[in-house]
Amino acid sequence: MKQQPDMSQLPMMAMKDIPTPKPDAKQITALVKEQGRVTGYQLSDGTILSKADAVELARQGGIRGVGISSRKGNEYLKSLPDQQEGNNLSNLPSVSPPMS
Image (cartoon, rainbow, N blue to C red; front, side, top):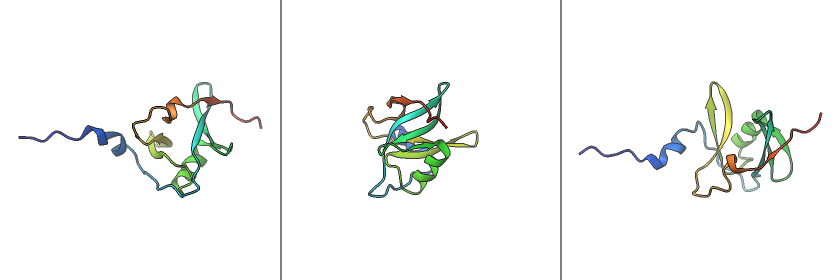
């Protein structure tokens, strides 16, 4: 009898990297969007980072609850599945990008 694959692990397997957060790691509290597209993330300390900077910080263990995925060569952050909908990145509020 052929064993069925464990589909609950699929979201984790789709991630390129799952960094281990440091004890002082921040959480993402909002998405920075421009014309409906995510361009960055706001952290729990109020810092706003571009997608690339946030990926690098997550890779260094500075952001908790996320993994790194890639689409068409572009890296971005994804929520780690934890049975809680409220902390999924797609459920977070959006903020406007900072004025430069």
